[in-house]
Length: 311
Length: 311
Image (cartoon, rainbow over all chains, first blue to last red):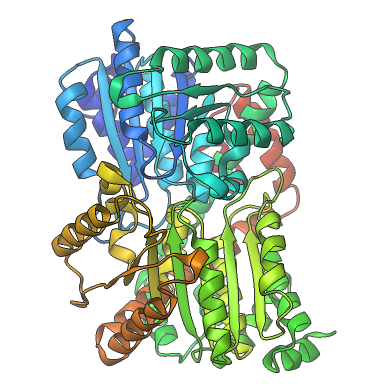
């Protein structure tokens, strides 16, 4: 399949073409840039939903149930699961296998895990590209699921149209810990496993924290209680997502938000490109290895090594 | 204080000099590079302990109790708390205030929070520099605490001599979710809040997962049960940390690990430097803003914008 064929099939929603396009973006293939230039003008039709929260919050079940809900309305659903993963083993494979049982056989569902695979950076950028590819391929909803609340994850979730933060009851006094990381990126909050003890307390604490937050767009984030494993609260969640989407489309802040996202994407791309250009120069990769060893042996410091590399 | 004075006072362990040096590294000040070149040869005496786990796992209490334990042995303790934080408000301030009550008045304890503060990247690099500064300033133990399990957090924890992963009981079937992210970076595992229900199940699941993992160094990571708020299990934790430190020093893998860390640092620094060089060029920052707006308005795609910026 050459690039022209790939683009054509991609825009028809062909799963193999989508998979290949995402791989190209992920690997930073030589024609990835050309591909993404063609993808970009076709984007903007999908609703991008970012879902984050700590491990154990039940995000995967929630995403699956939400996807099934959209499928019942005959919408095409793309799922991009971001896994910071291990530098050694890749990861995310187990989750994929479990998923394939319920959703994977449906041709109108596309599931992709993004992992770092030990490469140098670019996960966030690759994820945003994967979302754009699914958008251009005609998916109605694209759900991006991230594990954890790290810096990259926050960036990724911010690029969504609607960001959903998933909590569980009983985080007690530690709810404060969440505040700094993800409180202000949530457009919708979910308390999953809401049949557990402590749900009222968690809700009250969350409400108190939200009342302190000052959102630039004056949106009042709804709190939805779900039990994903029992398929409870999923319709309410979809309504909350939809209501923020509509609110955002009316508001003037939307362009500002999209500009901030665009700027972040530009910087990510720029950094990746600059690094690749340096490392592709003859001998630089070898020098990098040599210097790393010298630093490990304390014969050199990283700062002068970088100066030397850039000479 | 000029740079010579700063260095001198820093190496004497002066808290104001340490604070200023870390700020320089964090802000990427013009003389940060010169400072770090002087810092680097003085490092290598501290034990660097990385502590990670999800929000709500009680990491902060655990770090505080561990710090107090080391203080009782009259060791100097530096704490670097990494907070991916909000792009709007900074974050990490509340946690600091609470800490200052128990540890902050002790002159042999230095606490610093690192946050992104809306700047472009560099958090991981700045954190590693802060650790090096504390090491050079004569601290015996430097504890790096990260919230979440994101990609940057994993990188930061990997740079420690000993990486501690904190879990809590009752993560149930979701313990699998943790596997991919942090399982393989843990040299020591802690089950905190071990008076809670489900501790045996969590321990069994953890043991099962660890038995599947293949560590390159054949280390068998110990599992320590703690109740940080009641100061229970802290001595056992310190012993587990010490035993991995000793194991590592004997092993041949140590140089390899340090080389991998050095390489990661080099790439981080290189990327930051390359980006700064481009953005410092006349008019590039303005162009970046213009292009971001055009992308938001769908008049331009990010890939061609980057090509244009690099022209």
